[in-house]
Length: 419
Ligand code: GLU
Image (cartoon, rainbow, N blue to C red; front, top):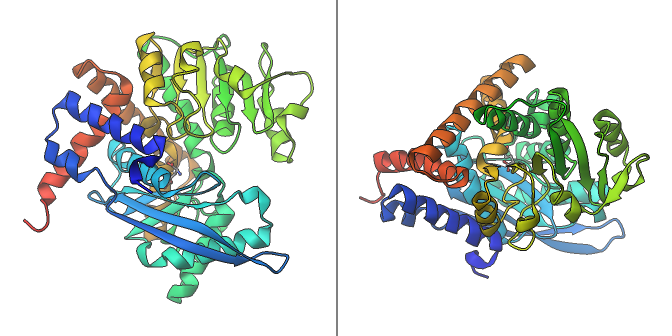
């Protein structure tokens, strides 16, 4: 399998090349960012509840570590492969650089549908995976976190396994841990909160204010979509549509987000909600709303459906939800896209806070965390917006340009080894 197989890798690399062209980046710098620094593929055999053994494929990819230890989530999903993991690791390099974190880019995952495994099987899977990749992770090497299909419990098992291998507790090996074992306040909501902050910044730039006439559709009412919905509803916006795997629900007068959150948290599907119109996930993406937040998975808006996407603002809550062609189509018709590496960076920013708090064994309160998160995202948003104006380009390329400028400076100072 070639690294360039997955559409996400091709797209991420093409976006990088485009940004490099616009800013006139030295080709030698681009050449050094082309492939991941290190990629590990592991077999993860576990005993299933029925006594049989099943082997899964696991990966951990470190794309670039010029700015610091690798950072990025672990994904449990049937679509996980080496190429997709490498693309996501590459996006993490630029995400961390863009928001000024002293961290590099990494990603990991297992090709598995976690919904098909029992809790015990998931624990075995996580512990065996942690054991197989333990030699390339650690608080100063590479620090995993949750992503699609993983959560605080996964991180707790991962941290415990790593600590068992070391013989002492190492909280700093992962972030996104439960609070009781060194997690940070605000981490669980951070990605969604960051999305809501970014929508607000975009509105401000356009001289608009979020209010009761602001309509929002959210594709993916989960770890990112729920807190984004809660925050935007608090700001006064009307969330008219949300979706999960069962389908999408719509109410032109606005959905009761508190009720919807309780409903899904209790394990119910959105399609079974009362007083809503059921629509498809595809229809949700094409609703005539002010703000569309694709917060589920990559590649949901492509060149096929992009011409029908009507939202004025599109906030990329997921990683790579719009393909490169979709971005071009929407930008051409005047849509304002808040790029993923900026829009969903709230998660890794609070992960960074968690890592720092763990290293110093001193914990901050929620107000401190949320205000620092706000300030970092505000500066980053302004930086991307100004870069877009300076280079007369779109927000997506501008985000890559800002990140590349930071990386280039650091790469030049460190030099190429051996000289
Ligand atoms: N998985 C998240 C992301 O894609 C968070 C990564 C982290 O916190 O390290 O940004």
